[in-house]
Image 1 (cartoon, rainbow, N blue to C red):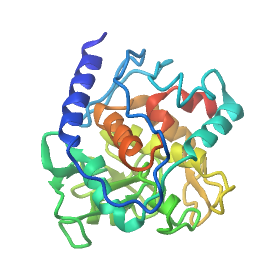
Image 2: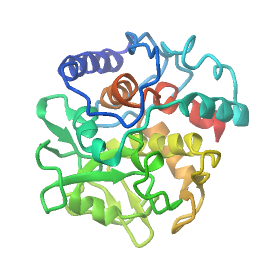
Image 3: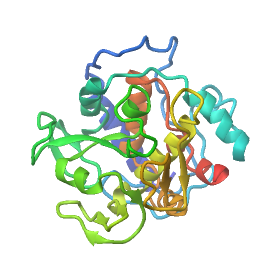
Image 4: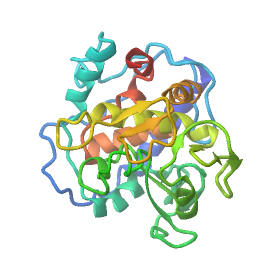
Length: 294
């Protein structure tokens, strides 16, 4: 086992200890029955990963997940449209929460592993007090990584409240991102941790590139147009506007490979699964499925 992998596990267990005592907010639907707690991680062959403050550099190879014989049993071994369809069926079985409940959920899912009073903000990487949630300068708010205007789902329970793409972000940095598509290039965002922006796209800081890619691709698999919401899909364009698309797919794929799942991202997936929605982001458990589908 590599030193990077050992470090990731150590951080994940330390984070789990902190999060164990948190109380979940009320849900708007009855939780799925007989959801098993996240099992202890087992060895995988992903060769590098970040820690939430940096990036890995190696491409993801085939991984082994503790959920392969249970949660993912109908997806393992498939590729292409068959894999996407199987994963859609699996992850669509979820408990939904209200938009107001997202505030407290994010205080648990994105808790700073080094300071239980704070959350880590997407894009900037800043650790900020949980109490500073709101809409003023210096506050953090709820960023829809898949911009809610791309498919016009707003804040409706479902895609508008799905924790797998909602993250705490600095109010001003969130406003700068707006509903821009994702691509490389642009000018440095003030207080954006190295993120960049231009007239039609946003580039997250390196440590968040893979997170953003896997959140976007989760949404594309989860929301296929069959439950009253738009069929969300990645494409190779920017400036998609209100169409249910976000680009650029090739860039997102490269980001996912450049920045493999960190211990922070993996723990976040576990908290959402164990405590809130009871579904998982499969591209965190199996990063190689990005290439297998797209």
